[in-house]
View 1: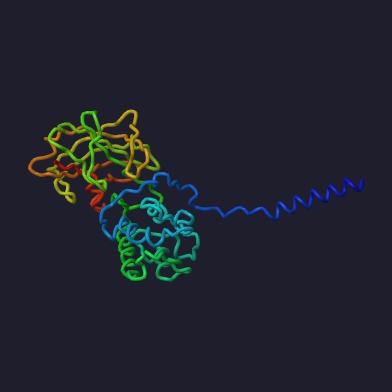
View 2: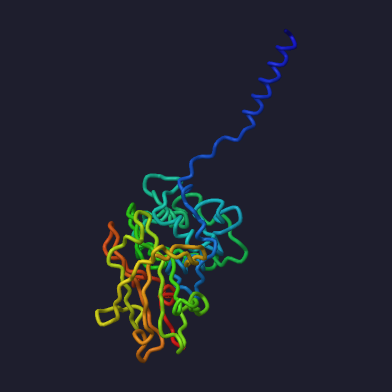
Length: 314
């Protein structure tokens, strides 16, 4: 009997030791559903506008904030890539809330964005907590904070120019590529530049990949493409064509390096595109069941996106 009692005491003690040494469950992370898979390869920009999300990522977030053990994916916001930066900033709930600052970035509202409150030491701890040796934050802090404020005040547009709406998913452009008579992919300039067309290419198949969190892109209504010589101005005199569905959708590399579904296409003759100019820009227009017509890219898009959506004749 004594031996059995000793064994019971020993087992209970071991169980108590295991329980006390076991790590407590971590607090719930509101970004657990965020999937950074599409961000493993970032869209490459050449000299992005400093007041755009691309410029903020290139000049500020990546060199200053994506420190090892900090905003390198260890803690949100995730500044490893351009897209992860945007997705973990805009309308994302702040972990610590004081009643005034509820989200990290609230479009059009710099005074209600905790990102700026942290940078300006209105809310502690002030960010950045540590600065990498190669960061120029110390020299340009005031300028950089002003650029972030300008971006937020302008609606915090994404790289394709869409303005986010809280609780209302929107259409997004995930990729564009072109092929010649189904024989091969048409190359681009460096830095995701224009699609290059030589004199032998007379028929172009142009493919588009879209994303929508509440609707299958194949069910978009009124999908069309418009072409213009001016990247900032599209009017009724420009070429307008309807997009066709790709059935089944075609898998190919997207804007951020991952494999995505290309659900729409259009066939264009090169003689329809070029007159006397060497470069022509294009944009898509789609209608979902939640929003008015969405232009991709819109007039607010970074210029690198507009170059990505263009043809250049050699």
